[in-house]
Image (cartoon, rainbow, N blue to C red; front, side, top):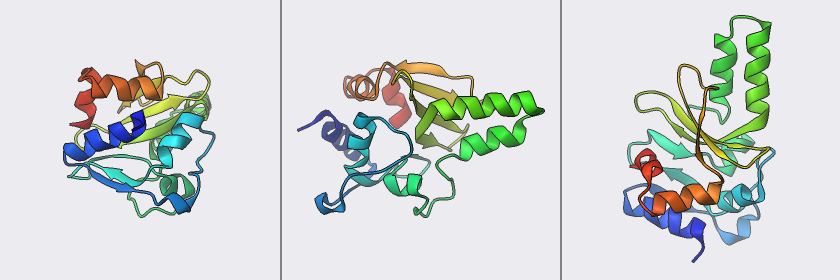
Length: 158
């Protein structure tokens, strides 16, 4: 069993909805993503907490075909709307060009996890300033390993 499959089983054991993708649906396609993220995306069609307050973005989310209240780039849009001037808008655009969100939480403060597409690191952002992030793990696999070992990132997933 792969690390990604073990992570899905971990979430399922905690009451998450884990709808696996059929093998015949082909590879997941998302915006400028990493190979490890694409491999993870290929495993599920839906991955959300029991209360639907947090979820992992799916290939359908990135394709714009999912029926979600939040677009995969909703926090980018919120940041652009809050920008006061052109320099702020440019900073928001630069951040989201480099970071790909893959997990969202809307119960309480809006939060996300994103991949830094340059380094592969996983960062955590919280409103009101989404772009002021902190590093959570050095890679997606390191995040999953940390959660499975009961590390502090496990708190994000209940």
